[in-house]
Length: 389
Image (spheres, rainbow, N blue to C red):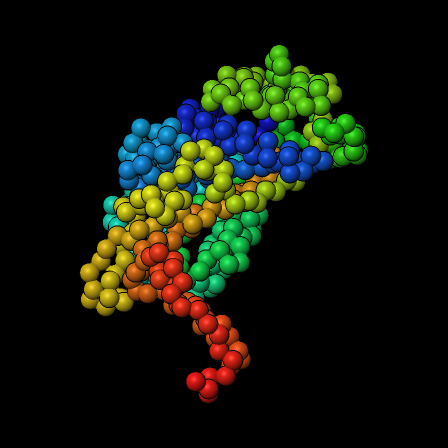
């Protein structure tokens, strides 16, 4: 019902990811808040940001990402994302009834890191990603705010932030972000004078009052067996049917039909969550495991504190994932996803400077001397008066 062009093909990988996430997130939403359970998320945002992780991955880390994204190789995935973004974005000479913006940012530490040229080029070619330098090492909070400001600008302020306080630290090596903004109009606009209050029956069987938009104009709608969720728990069963990648394409209405009673509730839904566990549920496990993650094709860091030292590929791990999405009345929506990568190396370059803490043993204390490998306590004691033998 929103103005759009004719379908030109959808990535099977994006469709598969969309339906798998839909099943998991809708189930989780129902468990966490049975009285509401509303959900909105952006499969494209998740798909494109994970493709940027795959572009820098190798070995088991890469194979798990490719499996989750239904891709055969890094190269085919990058080309698929490039074509998909190119198809989705409106042409400059196209109709002006739809606004769609898609932006990607790759944020590295200005003092210590540089993107590998091949990774930078693939990110730019597939997602139009722009590399930016920030000061994670010395000013992590300032870097976090800058990334959040970029997200807000890219989503017309519908998503005002993606990174929560404390998510970016001196140990952060790289942040990869995507932002999507959409604004369209209904192909047949609603007459505001027809908007009236009506009953909306929730899954728990309780009716609530909602404002319903109404229209007497023809609409692109269709009826299919099994679509009407008569039972209170009918929606979860319908979601299960929709987990097949070709489901939506096969059931899209092809023509406008005359309508009798046509009502759509006005709504505004938002969603914000860490997505690390959900990715693991999809089989993306190695990238979050410090012992197994291989993201060696992403970044180079300088040994020797930023002077003339040699560069090396740090051992990165996916430290956290955040996703936020907002939709209003089906005509304006925005989403952002952020991947935060940290170095797992025991000797980072340059050394990360932790925030200074005080330790003043100016009152009686106990002490232990422990052998590191075996954990054996070699000595133990207490000090009540250090001036006495």
